[in-house]
Length: 123
Image (tube, rainbow, N blue to C red; front, top):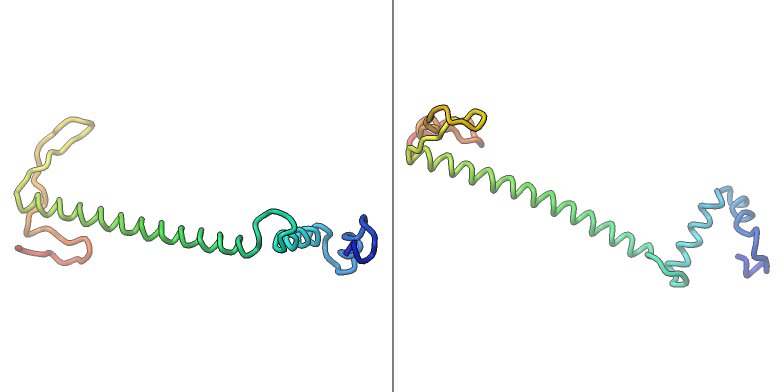
């Protein structure tokens, strides 16, 4: 713009006024256009879009990983409860660090799956 008119100062405010926009908007668009064309160093628009896509994908993968970890932990807890019940292992009741008594874990016939509300009965 300045090259065509021969002026250096006052061009952006004049053009912004003619377009009916804020001067800083025009200034930032001009700066981004210079970055995209390689005149100035910085993150190009295409690179910024790709970075945003990758960050979104990373968030989705973290969310999926958390779900899988929770499912894995839940299934191992379920296996531990089931194996203790089958083996007849007794679990101590503890209050404030002191063992009060031993209580039996869930019996095989009373064990209920956390995924369905139906007793499993005998194995």
